[in-house]
Length: 301
Image (cartoon, rainbow, N blue to C red; front, side, top):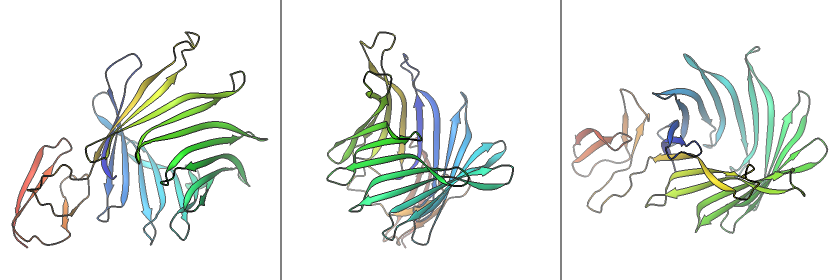
């Protein structure tokens, strides 16, 4: 589901208060293509820019480049980029990552990932690091999908220079076909014998239209100080998502599909209706808290 903004909160362990931490603002073009995402960090009084992503698309509408920029007052500067290649069926085949070289003012080749599909479903990702001359094995992810075509489990292994060794295992649980939670376990070599231990859990919450509106992240405390007798989950972040959809409308209301861009905007907003109005209408603009900030009567046609 597309969203125009999201707010991330964190909560120090042992407290009950969620603190503002990050917010992201997304901008789409008139065709609903995500063009940019700005991340801002809360400094205790206001949000200040942190980083920015900008996207370009190929002639088939596939996102072929993502530019990452870091904020250095007074502007964003290049950090890295990802160049994406696609198969004829528009599935992603390869990602090349380049880091920005501040000295030479160019992008340097850094890493590569290849994607493998089985019956149209992503089943493996192979990651490589470029050493200046060749690509070296870095990590690999094996994916097992459910009957309805979404991840069931993923196993990530890293290459230590000699062998592939376990790194992380993620189990995806669903309520029907909606994600319920994901559970990540990390490979612990301090155990006798080595084994998997809980690490992170992500819980999803939905509104009445089955659209995700909140994500809760938790971490596992192994209770090392207590000898491991009482391990527990504790909250580490909460993500609150604002979607672009018009939700919970009544049968007495008739809505016309329209595009609004840029979003967010400062002093000018373009509104484009997909079809003419068959009768008089009204255009209302609300801020992110739902407060009406503009109301315009529209004529038939």
